[in-house]
Length: 101
Image (cartoon, rainbow, N blue to C red; front, top):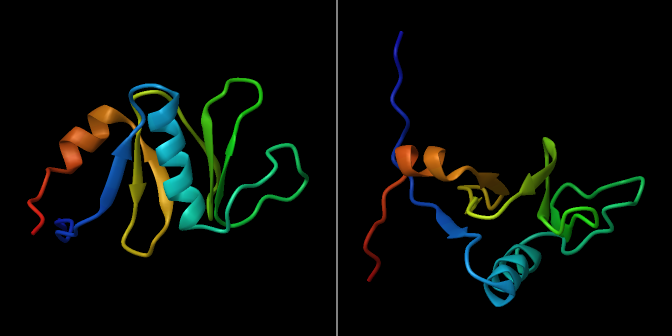
């Protein structure tokens, strides 16, 4: 059988630009999750955001574990409010901009 993905509208921000833009993305995730977490802690929350001390990349705590977001990655807020990174080529193949009122 074949299936088609249901059309849904998501929120997303791309990690481009300088430190100020990355800070905006970080705050967006922080406001809408359990907040910041210590990336070196033994336990990681089910949702949250941090910075990888080794690379400086954004770390996003998800139900599937911690995911790393690199420059040019898109950060998606899914239909249930969850956050996760997405590579630019996958994002371009899967999503298109919608007009908002």
